[in-house]
Image (cartoon, rainbow, N blue to C red; front, side):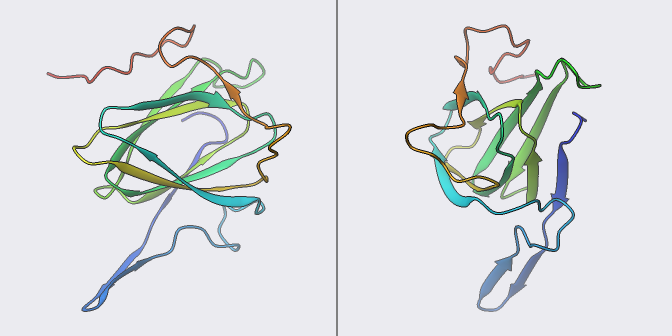
Length: 151
């Protein structure tokens, strides 16, 4: 696993009324600090990425559909420099994925309905100076192909 990436298995508490799922608590090992919470949606087959943050750490939970989240360690001083990690998360695998700063990441909706990710980031989004650096999803030096792997 890429240095600094962490997974938290999420506990789903169902009852006859529905269910509750805690995503991130301030007493969790993966919790660092609170910046903001936002939702992002991807339509089936759509790739959103690549990007990274120089300061912000992300905490992704896919709450609808299934998402393939891919990480690339582009940190030259990291013991896992050059590593790729794939995580399949969502309705069939309820996890929180902690993504450290400077780790390049993106995701693809792999189901037949839109996928929704909730992110509890460590920093506020600064509209006039965003901590977000984008890389083209297909034309880049990242050794990854977003195509489905049949077989």
